[in-house]
Image: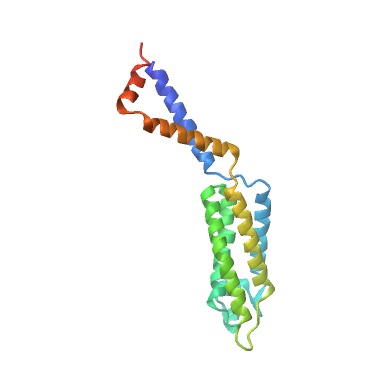
Length: 193
């Protein structure tokens, strides 16, 4: 009889492991296409003028064009946050469908929003003779805002199956903790004739 119980316990462990793996995944559904399009728009915004003659890539790497138009730290911070979280972690989250990576993409994109606001503001208050914000900077900022919204919807949408499985795991854990040591021994002996 214990051989059957061992087989069942191994089977139950396999099911629990698969359940935990599925619980750690996201299913963005149609939002995956929207997020993918937003990632491509964000990449395209780096090719557009960030400010004056400097493109987003120039602001990112701090090239001579960026130095010529006096791109400040807020613009560089925003472009790096947008690239790392808005593009990098978004692509990773879409490819792997891992909940943790989607959360990181959401958190980083949320940090990029005020950095983008500060970047636009710093370009609007630039000294005399320096250009204001370009279409690339504004487009990147708006895209990061929309991307953050969609990642928030994906991260916080849990299916009924995920919620039911989570509740069932909590109940099973509570039952195991409620049993005393002697009660757990009685359960093991009760299977034998």
